[in-house]
Length: 366
Figure 1: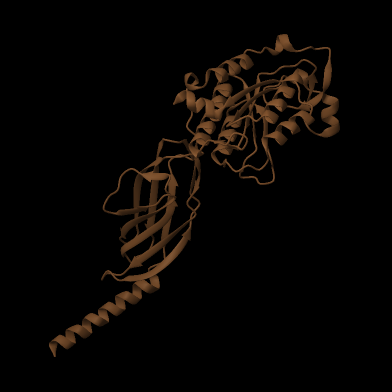
Figure 2 (figure 1 turned 30 degrees about the vertical axis):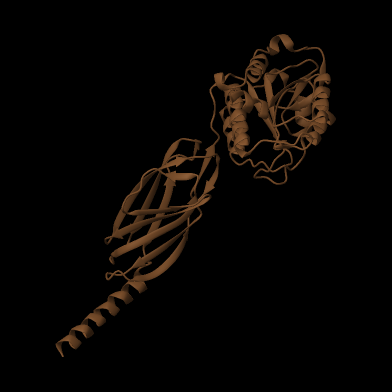
């Protein structure tokens, strides 16, 4: 009889506490996940901070937070309160918390950003339980947590000699000596770093945009990288892999950084898949300054080697635009005879064009 009575009391206590946790377990729970920096370069480490708050009198004996995260964000350490199950592309990260009444728990994790990309952690799932260890309920939460991983950048000495010489020649151009102040060849949009003496106030007033005079022989220290997303040369059946494309993005980022830090202007043309599907090819006009550097790095972080427009058409569009006195650095896996012909026509039109062949650079480094 005593055993029956004890079992009855135990069952009643269990049901009461189970009901309390089921009714009020979700209330007053707040969770936040942040990275210590909004952007880093591939290979660097950041700190991911988890903060969870219980704003009610009822404690939570245990609460499990699970998140599906990209595998390219690798946790450097694992403790008893965390469990990580990683695959090739995704990993499941789980944290176990115990929350007393009106308490806050902060947990920090070192995360290595292995590869370039834009990584978002939009959702997470809670599972919480009662004092007897039984699961009571589940809930999902939205989070605004993301990090941008830029490509690895190289020192100037690590860049191919041809690219270094080309950058140096572009940076050595002096507007004071190269401009012909008596011959104006139309107008163009104002770029950061342009002299206010070049502003065409009449054209600016008519269009509502800040426009400057374009000199007939004006050569700026502008450099536009034409980055080709094509990795396969059908004519020779040669191909470079995704790792070579990542290396190309590292070259592009390195050239851009060196140009910006040396007082030059950098622009970018890309014919692959970007975050904006409506702008094909992506084209960013050369500008100077830290904002331009950050803007270009953010764009490169989201590039994919999915061809949206052949390089032939990109070069043909440049020729059709009548561009002159510009500096182009073409980064491509291969150059077909047709592409080489168009690059030569760009030179003949009064532009300076240098080509960096990725398969050649990989063979040289290998």
